[in-house]
Image 1 (tube, rainbow, N blue to C red):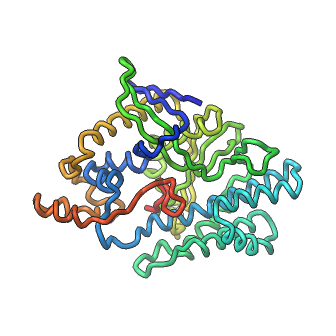
Image 2 (tube, rainbow, N blue to C red):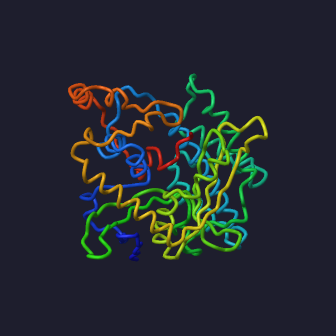
Image 3 (cartoon, rainbow, N blue to C red):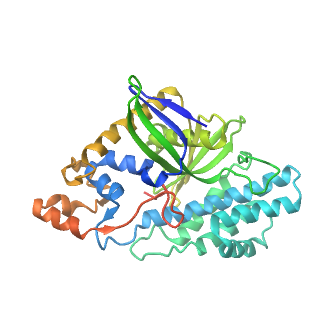
Length: 375
């Protein structure tokens, strides 16, 4: 399937990956966003894959990853119930659970999760018991310096999430007769993208467009909709409004349309507060639904074209890239590269030589996922 997404002066052609994919650089929403937040930071961290030595644990990303595994299990349990309601036999349902449970968690973890859900009395209980088992085997552990991102707080948030989960929004499945068929649960994608001048047809950039989609569902109106889970310390009106214009979801509906072979132009963001609020000023769970129409696609392609120009100009010398000092503090903590940017040229070159390699890829199942960090 070939998709052509038109911008103002460019068009993005998206299709399946050719065999020589390793020769192409990968770009995902996190990388594009980081480069636009600060070109120096984005290029060093996500193009060169470097970080400051001794930076410590990335607790926000670790916690976000563990929560996303819980979201995956809840979708898996929902899918089992969905297939039961469709009248599928026990052999089919067991095969579906084993195949996709192993894909998501591996054999040993799935065995542990399966034992923990045996005493469950109903579907919400399955999801809660299973999520606790997922957290127990996630590898996440509390940090005494962080009182918000604790396992107990994560359990409480997940229980609140299950209580608000829409069981009536079915999960997309490619083939209802094949238990190993593709389903709309944690979908990694890797697409071949060509950015070309829309007037001359001249190809300017070719790259891998990569990422992960948390879920593909049918909404209450029967429309295919992508789901994206996010966790944050506070789900304010500002948080909700900021989701409406995010380019992340525009890219995801393009990837989901290619994956399913059906046109998708709906997205829903599911926000979960960590920890759950103790007052009613802010809710502990929020959803925001949005369309992605032609003009949103145009804006997305224009944004990509601009970002790729920055990459092309500074990719071989990130220290010469602009330093957007208004973003030296984000999510209430300083950027790791402040010592590098503060120093003179000799100091910058010295620090660059001491940076640690830390490869980033949203396709790496052992790493953190695209955009899953808790604020």
